[in-house]
Image 1 (spheres, rainbow, N blue to C red):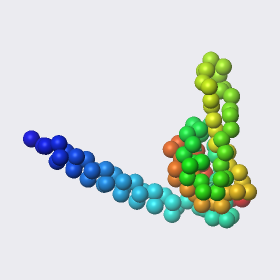
Image 2: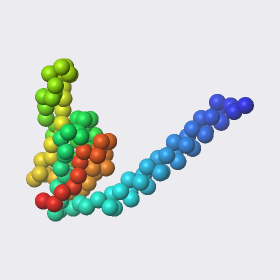
Image 3: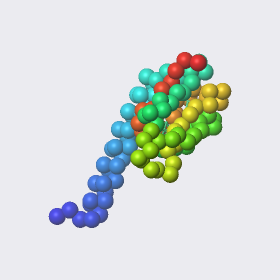
Image 4: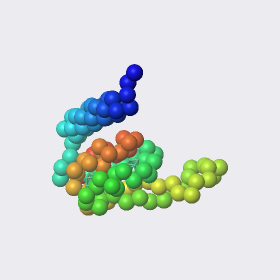
Length: 110
Ligand code: SF4
Ligand code: SF4
């Protein structure tokens, strides 16, 4: 029977394998994304769930959250946030695109 130590080791190996695979996928995706000075990030509002991930990764303070009223008054949630890009501050680095879990951010030409 597999011991607890062996199980922990297998789990660590699997976690490492997944981390390497995700890093590779992200690297490939980043290469395909356009970016740089001539581009700026853009958030598609209805795809944004206000999760904050893009704000965390943006080194240039180029993203802010704003409050959005719920489309239906029947849904009573205290906060419904959306992200918005501050165009002047955005350097086109693409980090937010890679961090967004809902693919709500695209890079567009300035
Ligand atoms: S592209 Fe870079 S600088 Fe622009 S909003 Fe995204 S993370 Fe910030
Ligand atoms: S990471 Fe994506 S879903 Fe989350 S707040 Fe930013 S744009 Fe919205």
